[in-house]
Image (tube, rainbow, N blue to C red; front, side, top):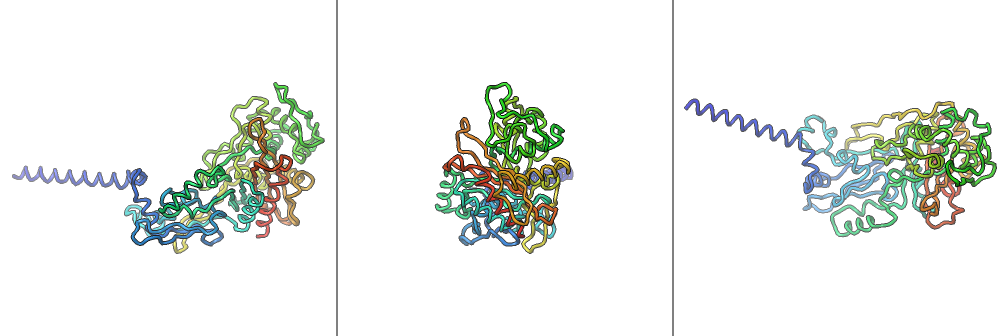
Length: 489
């Protein structure tokens, strides 16, 4: 009997250990897998059973939560203040279609499931207790955001704007048009389903974040990168010295001539070539330096970085991997397969304005609990030095010349120093589509060496006359409005 009792006790102990092991395996190691299993409604119920925390701009909420039904396990629906204005920042939080952008990346904070929201984070992580939703404070400057949105809306075209603080990397404005109201996707009713269907099938793709997720040929704005490569590599030692640049330039190994939209480009200096936007000078420089040199310079500004998060994921901008010589010529003037997001081109302008140092852009300033106490703040971090300070200052002066005497006169601001570069990017079959209008720039007060803002604007257009599609005509005034708003701060 004693042996039988011992065996029974041992067997019971074994069962208990197995039960504890299985519970640990399920709750600790497999919890995340089960949370994301298809058909598991628990995460969705957690998100919407209680009011979510808010996304803040300048300390004020631009989101809210509205009670839908006391009997529903999805009792709260998301609401938005100025939804279309801030949609490229907030994204959406939908009971039917999930979350995107900040609503998605910071969902644990907003839904109250992040263990750091509790008084005792370790205990909260083990018990998986629910806390009141926390808040996400963004870096957005409302005046700059409104200026960018109004400027793009005035063109009647699709487009995007990205503006950042060159010294810190804080994103000051992020706009994409056409936009949409994320609030129409809240709820589980027929209206929400119809709204999703309409947005999802809209040929203008209003839910696409063009500032972060769309890449465009950057056109002549990329000549700033090629100029940086020429100065850094020593291919050009004096920006005011003549270059050996024919006009037109016969693309290597072809019979195809490349011309210019400006006069005076034959053997033009690097400074004049940037001011007048001479295709021939920069295409030949790209070939003379080689694709690897131009690519290394582009990468130093942030190109080809598939890991960039702000914390929302950003589509990588690219310089072609193995272009031949004629392709290298075209890639060096921002054509062929060179592609960039507006945020990336704002980073180029910011790096030059910041004496060559490119700061890592960030959109979230801090995460807080519902009572306002801080959970996490974002540190200013450098991505690296794209060019040396002396080269950066040469590029700054050249970009300032583009504004004062070149193609970007529409970007001048009284009482401020502005440097910029216009761009007209060809695209479509045989480049027959109406070009994209680009403009990148930075600005600082005339009495302050600290740059205040760097901005990139791209305007798509399918209707205007080709002669009107220039960065200086369409994009520069939008950039000026954004920079003026930041300088007024």
